[in-house]
Image 1 (cartoon, rainbow, N blue to C red):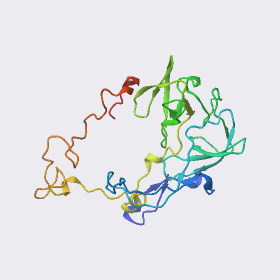
Image 2: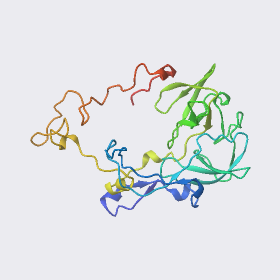
Image 3: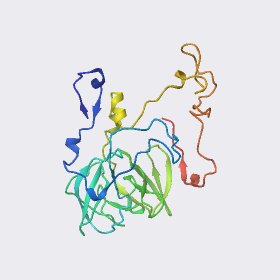
Image 4: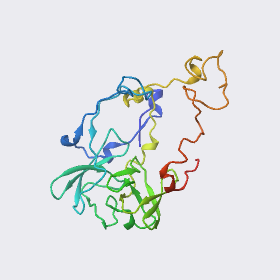
Length: 276
């Protein structure tokens, strides 16, 4: 982590990830860049459906290959790059046939290392193979929930899932939330942990840095009027005044289970996540 000299109160505790030591000084590949229009949390009618979004620095989306479906074609890591749309780093891969793609970079991935996606690939960090061929105890990321759809689980910075057992057509995975879940063994997963494991140690430090990230201010409910929030109104600081915590729309929150008990995929959850 990188710390600033405490020249101002806001910079005293501000921390950064030291990109110079981790990333390759190279420009992103133009053919894999796309401009995504900013909607500031608004829907097609122009109404705000997600609050506290808007502004921020302009950024380009990198097209990341979550499927990694170039089977048995080895590729070389050409660069480790920053991606403004995700917390982990991405790796630029050049394959033997000359094609270049972006994939999620694993923690120990280095420039020049050769990786491959294959059913029985070597058990090397960054390689991608079927879950049934990965031994118990290994860490994996970018895991397929549906065969051929591409990775959907464990894609953020520092995340991983641990293989606990192979039972018939399914593999038991322990996720970062401590939930134990069954996944089809024929699905692919990448070995290792997602890069940028120090991301959770970042201290934003000041409001202006949040605005640059596209995050707008959040007003406390107790500071509002009664018409705007269940916690609003009163003379000075008042207690909440409601038995259960509520959102600004009066819906009960904070402790209430939101998952549908009859959801079809509930049968794949062997152990629910525990409270930390």
